[in-house]
Length: 297
Image (tube, rainbow, N blue to C red; front, side):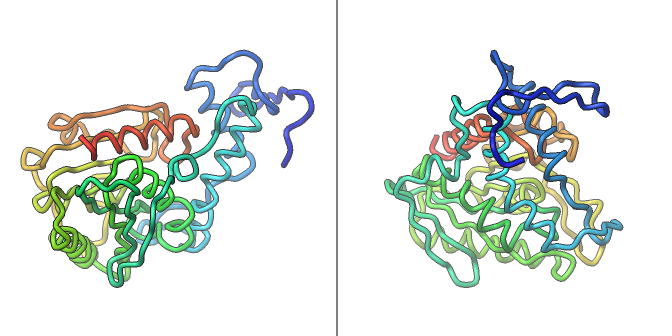
C-alpha cells in the first residue's frame, strides 16, 4: 500500500478488536488515537526485526536492525499521511528544523553539528540501540537528522559521538570516547557542556554525569544489569543526587523500557504520547523543541 486511497477505508483488526482507517480519519483523533493508528499500520506493514541483543538470545543481525531503524522516520511520515490525512503537517524534526546547520567530521569522535546562530554552549549526543546497534545507516538516516534539528533549534553545537559498540567493545571504551568528546568541546571554549542520550545512550550519558553541566535523557534505559560482565566491567550509574540539572523525556506508551522512578525524582520529567520507537511526527517535533529549550535554558 503506497498511495492514499480516494476514499478512507475502514479495516477491522481482529487481534486488537479495533477499527483502523486508511486514507485519513474523519474528525479529529486525540494523540493516543493518532499513535494507535500509526502503530497498527507500521506493525502490519513494517514489523520490527528481533532487536534483542545477541548475548540475550536475539536472532536479529546488526545490519538488518539498523536498516529498519534508518527507514523509520520516513515511514512514520508516510504512515501519518496515510492514516491521519494530509491536512496536518507530518514532517519529522530532522526535516522540519534543519535551517542553516552545518555538519563536519570530527575524526575519532563523530560529527559536529554547528547551528546557524551558536550560543557558545556545546553538547555531546549518544544514540540508542541497546549497546550493540544504532550506528551505520541508522545513525545517518534516523538519529543524526534529529540531533541536527535540536542543535539548530537550541543554538547548541553538538558532537554526535560515534562510540564503539558491544559486544566487541566494553563500556569503558564507550565512556572514554564520550569523555574525549566532552574534553574537545571544552577545548573549543564551550560555556557549558551537556550530554544527551537516547535509550541505552542515556545510560552512557549518565555514566559521564560528573563531567558535564546538564543531562538530557530521552526514553532512557538506565539498566546495566543485562550486559555481559565482560562488556559492563565495573560500570555503575552514579547516584542521581550527584547529577547536574537533568531533563528526562518518557513515552507514556513505552513498553520497551520501564520508568526509572529512582532517577526521575531528582529530574524534570516530561511525558509524551509515544512508544519507544513509534511516535507521531507532531509529538516528535514537540520532543525536539522541548529538548532544545532545555539545552538553551
